[in-house]
Image 1: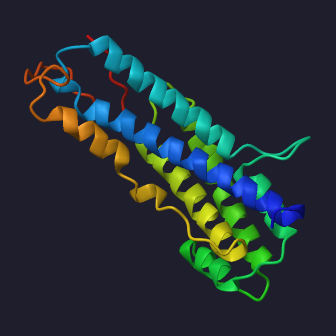
Image 2 (image 1 turned 180 degrees about the horizontal axis):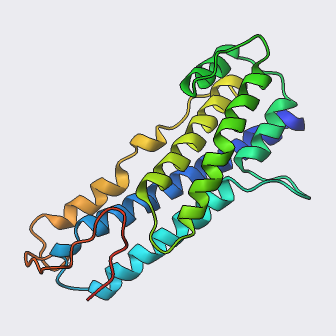
Length: 208
């Protein structure tokens, strides 16, 4: 697997997995700060800046994940799919599982099934990426884009690379790390609740 197109597919999908996990952690950070905004009474500028940076990384990361190839190979969804189409699939049931998850009835030609998934998802992805670029980001748009890319990443791992995928969407390390300083350490979050400072999950929080 180290040489040839199979090795390139393996390396590209590994890089995609790293980017997906970084986006997941950044999205968790964005959400955690927003949900706890009313309890932050110190370092408001710092947490507001961290939240804005998290939002920016999610937007840039998703744009990278869904970037279309032009003159060179990319570790993006479309780039990896191009490599996968030129590689012998080892586990056809992985393609069938992926197809059914997106309401496509599996056929004898797995590539045509995946093509149908992409055809259905393409306008949804384009719509959500426009929302990501807007001033008021949508958590739902973030999550749907991330969920599809994670499902595709898992399909490639299972179907072509004989490896299990990290449970990216269920990785709660960022949430767990943020929970510890919230307990009994008022210098981080504080107990004061100020009217108007709570951030909804779909709107960025800025320091008052």
